Image (cartoon, rainbow, N blue to C red):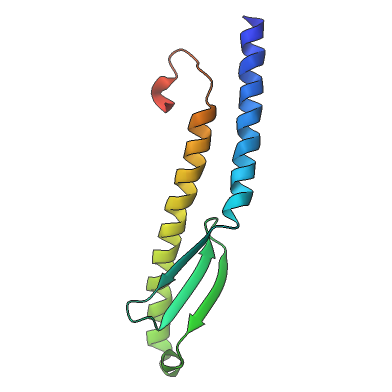
Length: 107
């Protein structure tokens, strides 16, 4: 029994390490999103850090329109990045879960 506990603890530590490695890797996964007319383009990481914003000069003439474009496009980009992030981290966590009786709800 003690050996089983040590084995589970080792597996949990390995999983924690893999989760941290995955988080670092997600800093290099880029998500691109554009407005429908491509007047605004945003790139962010799967960890939801903004890397670049490209704005068409036409949008610079109308502050209110630019704000609307930013809100809509940023929200779409963040939603995409969140899905990638959650999927990647969930896969690593699920793979590393030890086989504990009654805890198979995570598998």
